[in-house]
Amino acid sequence: MGTNLYKHSKQGELLLRKLCSGNRLGIEILSLDRGPGIREMNKCMEDGYSTTGTKGNGLGSIKRLSMVFDIYSTAQGTVIVSQTWNSLPSSNDRSLELAAICIPYPGETLCGDAWSSNSSNASHTLMVADGLGHGKEAAEAADLAVSLFEENIELPPPLLLQKMHGALRSTRGAAITVVQLNVQTRKIICSGIGNVSSGCITGENSKSFVSLNGTVGHQAQRFQEFTYEWTPSSLLFFHSDGLQTRWKFDGYPGLKSRHPSLIAGVLYRDYRRGTDDVTVVVARENSSGTFA
View 1 (cartoon, one colour):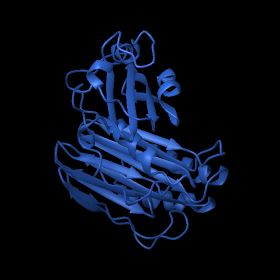
View 2: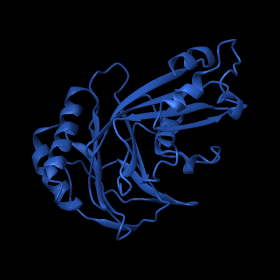
View 3: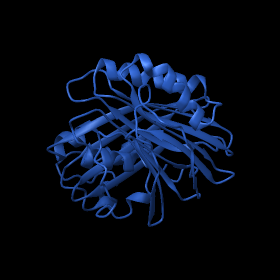
């Protein structure tokens, strides 16, 4: 994947992420570029086809070595996701297909954003925290929020936020959104303080979730939950303010139906501000290996 970036694109990135789903462990490689795109996708997937005089086994080999593989290419560039796991999912796996990109402010080694998730049967709880500013102090606030989330996962979102508010008083503070999704009741419960954006896309309809004004740890007038509908085809998204808020899927035909990592990758590549830490989280119900 790195060789492809070197040969075919003027600007590209490889992002690696560790994966964990119950007892299953894996690694994800996400390739992003602003190259010319792949015009003849079917031919490029065949062994022996090359536009640069090589053996032409690259994309085909990547797909064969991947348990999950998907590729999205337009004139704006190409995004490839490859996942390898230590075991196959069980037939009754009800986990979410979950994508996450969390990148620090350029030049920083610590990220002031953080995210986490927890799944239990049909219930899935996710959170994104954006520590104020960037660097060490922002990272301390965001990391503490993650620790509290994981230690108090049984609490409903408003009470979880309220607990974080008390504990983060000694930090710089953070914008935080917590979402609880139940795939049986088809309900989403959301509670947010500050400018972490979140929402749900179903077909052509997009719904942004309410996040109240304030800063967790410093100023929050109330902690309130909001309830939204969920369908098997819905797409859940979060992002910190390191991503522009006025992004749209217009100009990306078919992207909404692709693997969540491709969606997160395109949003990160095309809409990141470059002036802050950036986190993008995208999730949908498990499609049982559609992309493998």
